[in-house]
Amino acid sequence: MDFNFSTTSLDPKSTKVFLCFQDKKLTKAAQDFDTHHQGFLKKALENNRFSGKKNETLVLNAPHTLESNRIILIGLGLEKDISLEVLENAGGSIFPLIKSAPDQMLEVSVGDVTLNNLTSADIASSLAYGFLLRSWSFDKYKTKEIEDRKVALKLITFQTSEADKAQKLFTSLEQIAAGVFLAREFVSEPPNVIYPASMAERLQELTRLGVKVEVLGLEELKKLGMGALIGVAQGSIREPKVVILQWLGADSSEKPVAFIGKGVTFDTGGISLKPSANMWDMKYDMAGSAVVAGLIRALAGRKAKVNAIGVVGLVENMPSGSAQRPSDIVKSMSGQTIEVLDTDAEGRLVLADVLWYTQDRFKPQFMVDLATLTGAIVIALGDFFAGVFSNSNELVEKIKLAGEKTGERVWHMPLDERFEREIESDIADLKNITFGRKAGSAMAGQFLKRFVNDTPWAHLDIAGMAWAEKDMPTIAKGATAYGVRLLNELVQTYYEKQ
Ligand code: BES
Ligand code: ZN
Ligand code: ZN
Image (cartoon, rainbow, N blue to C red):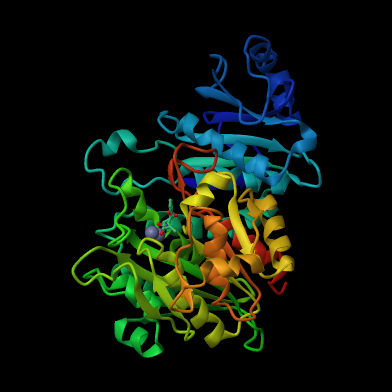
């Protein structure tokens, strides 16, 4: 499927897509078309429920006087509310309408419209970006009906008065999308295919884009003293790995920014075994690490002028004769000892060592970790927001703004001195669970804070965001890659040299 930006209308056979504001207000491009086609759209608007609200769509059969098969109207909502997110969603909502249609060419008419400081190039490129993001699917394991599932569409053209500019913007957005797709692929793969060693191996492929990739195996992790991470992995026949990705796009004197991912390639709970119903969804317990990989992929693809480090802790949490027991005490790389009272609270054990390692080795400007860390965050924020916990309000503000811009939203959650007492162990420095269920996500955040030293840091609990239970405008049901776009935006807006 090719994307194209053009100042003129190219092929009369293309399926036409027009944009419409709320209350049946057609854009100028649509009105122009209509005057040349006997008020076809006006009549269609009079005879249909479609009113141009956000996410509304209308598919019409073209009149026989036209060479194209179909005409599609996409609602954008009120003009004053139009944002990049609204446009991306509108672009995304086109895809399911043509997915199983025989149409090979599509033409989206943007014209020379400008809206709320957005140029025609911004509008065209974000419609295209939304369409691209929605078009991704994971069907490599489907051995039948492949022909039926193939999308017939070959070319999608965005007709805009600023075709060159739109193309340029889209070229950069395509790189972010490539990062999103890499993350979605990792998350979608089953745990018999993606496990620590295989994921580490796939990450090596990023060297092709100029990313430096280092893989630490069990022996090295032992030498570093990562007892907390190793303890989680010890019940599995699969060796743990820590992978360090470095995209060095700025001067070597620039302090790096660092991203850390929880990569539990399958979380059974260990000896504190999870109930079997829905246990399958613990295949996405490595989403944090997938997003870190996708982010570094995006930054490298765009040749971002920043030094960015990604560190992922990859382990499989299994019950077995060699698994750690509830009440084991492990020693973390920081020197702090942890009483493991529940082997299912494993994410914080993995992150404890990876966070410590990252600040110790790289002295970054800040660290952001991503983790499907607690069920409690799903109760608190559902799939509407990730929870952000931080020792730096300044960093939180930046992440919040990046969230508003990309539609990958966060909600600021508390860390507090008073939580400290709760994570104290009777016989070790810390324990990995707290009594009862109160403030479960915050307790996990407070635990992590003990391993960041003085580095400005934010923890994103993405347990509710990593997997979409239903289709969304720019995400088909399944892996979301939540976080790639958010953190790419954070870096691009605040930390990249122009
Ligand atoms: N991976 C889970 C958290 C999770 C839950 C992710 C739902 C995605 C969806 C994590 O390792 C876990 O099991 N957390 C426990 C912690 C508890 C034992 C303190 C939880 O949230 O129940
Ligand atoms: Zn767990
Ligand atoms: Zn987990």
